[in-house]
Image (cartoon, rainbow, N blue to C red; front, top):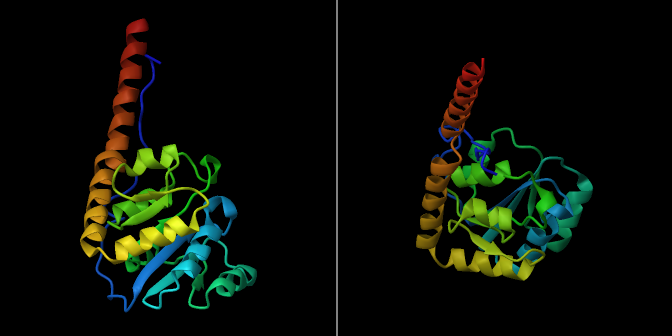
Length: 206
């Protein structure tokens, strides 16, 4: 519509940024979110079972910890570590080598999933799903797989594991994309400009 403006959601890129953390002994995958099917939680668990790689670990950071969920995860692979809500989310983002966010549908997240742009801003290589609104956010800065596809997730992990340069390139380009499109400073500036234009039009109507 001619009278609409697009203002993208913004985050604090000075807070969500790459920080140095102790080097992992193994390639560490991480999932952040609800332990629900819509978020693709079962897909990352099944993908890790398919990997069956002792040189890769998986940390599940859940918004709500439950013994039932931990039992489900460890039934697939006892090496999976399950955590409750993070006390230092930026540190936990940065401790991971690869972030896996396998959303299953458009209703599995808000228009722009905060976890997705926060981990991108931290310079992490990401594996996510090729839903239209997700692809619009990540562009060419992530590996996108089909929904409900543990096999494709496992293959994407293997691809990143064998190519450290690709990991670094994706992480760097992901942060650059967030700083360009999803920085809260730009968002605030656009809202301010919009409000000023409203006031100017109202004053002319009086």
